[in-house]
Amino acid sequence: MLATVLVGSPVIAFATESVYASLQRIQHDDAMQSGVESVTFHRVKVDAAGKGGRAVTVQPLWAEYQVMGHGKHRVTDLDQREPGVQPMLDALASGFRTTVTAKDEASALEPVNPRVWEQALTEMPDATQWQLSGENVLAMLPQHVPAQWQVGQIHRRTAQSQAHGTVTVTQKVVAVTPAMAVLDFTVSGKALKGTGRQAVRRSDGMPVETRTTLHRDAVRGFPATTETSHVADLGYEPFLEPMTAEQYRQQVASVTDELARPPYSAPSGRPDDYAASKEVEGQLDPWMVSADALPAFEKSLRFALLPDRDSGRTQLAIGAEARLGPASPVSSVLEPTLTVRPRSVTLLGRDGKPLPDLEAVQVLSSMQMEGRHKVAETSPSFPFRLPLNTTEQQRQALHRIRMTADVEVHRWVGTEVIKPGEASRINPGVRVSLPAPHRITLQNERVQPAAPEGIWTSVVPLDAEGKEIPTRDMGIGPFQKKVGDSDLPLVWEFRTQPYQNEMAAERPIAALQLRHYGWETLRREWEFWRAGEDGKLLE
Image 1 (cartoon, rainbow, N blue to C red):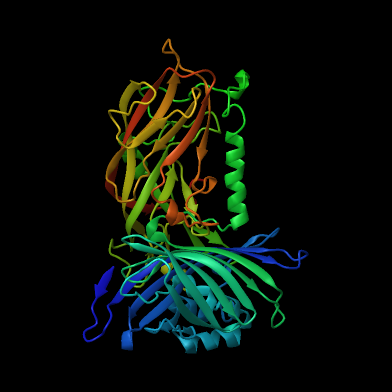
Image 2: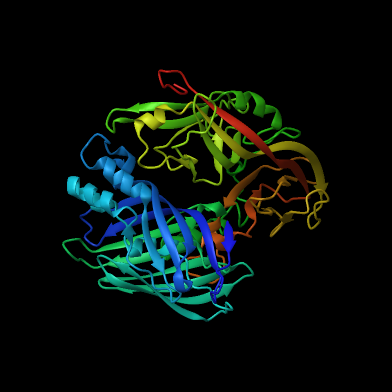
């Protein structure tokens, strides 16, 4: 990101570019009507504007929605041969813009290319469903940076909505760290009210993550709805899950209740409740990838343009034909899975040079790839996006995809045996405690995206004779335990929480065998070559 100081301005203005993902669930107050779920990606560009304001351009990159009980629909499913579709895609690709003043007043969103948008509306009136409004982008807009962030501060900002007039957001600072501020807020507008929680960067006021629940009254023929959304800057490698405070409470209560019952609260006396470890000492876990597996996997990287008769265009897919390790005969065992963090994506023509009129917009900051992996741009897991208005002619010019990526590989480090209460001498980032003679809490330090290397540790309980004790174990996810005092915290608030496993042993534990696996990040230059002219990939 580039930060520039506005000469003569009393504030610092930041030029930034971020990609946000949004997951939304809409429930109608009328239970007879089906709910709707949507996934969208937007690129947000922020530049300096006059009088200390900021100009914001929001470009839709991909959108998918599903009426519950029905199939999924995407903006890229639209047939570019139909009247109005290409102008609409051109207008969407250009984006919408607003100006946020130094007083945090956002003007109405307007198309960057109004002439093309008007043409699209004339030829295709349904294009209005893809138009953005002020309340849709609040979670992606910058806000004023106070001279000092303090818990208890109250701040108000506004945006303009076509359906709800002036939308007012009243924020209260509830937590401050050196880099972030966490805000609780309320939303109000004509026939609109809601609540939410947001983390913003203290340096430039850009949102990192936002949870919002909005209730819309019936207006202009539209039914009353309740919308739950989760929006986050993908640069922070978030996972998104729209939920309510009640769903969060229920998840925490479910895990708490399970830990309060045998075999966790006390040995159950039933051998079927326990199992021996599936790990093999001296070998990698089935899901881990060794550096030796990379060369063959990388030689098999391919992309294809898959025909789609309905939309009049092909769909881009990438994949690998080789495996990252031996296939498991048991379907419940994870395949070796490679964590990939794309750093850049370049689209090349037959001459080996970058295509001059086609951009790959990197969306995901991390992805998972298994052997014989395949993912198409119809999936939210696709790592980059072509502009919405990309033509078939532009697609067919694509000959090769070059990706610079960081990948995580593993190696076996070794074992050590410790007594209960002792610390590991090999991995300072692991904590093992025994809440009861038959219970283990294992906590591995959470991996930060920029970390170059580390150690992952698992544990096997031993009895007084040094024999392995069968166990039952349960992984504890971020929203399965209580963190802080919020009714519904942000994913960002779990950033320092360790990976946690709870284990119950069949009988009392005398010692603990720690099994250590090292991991490191390797920088790789990948080439995805085009599959055969039949367009098939891993079929």
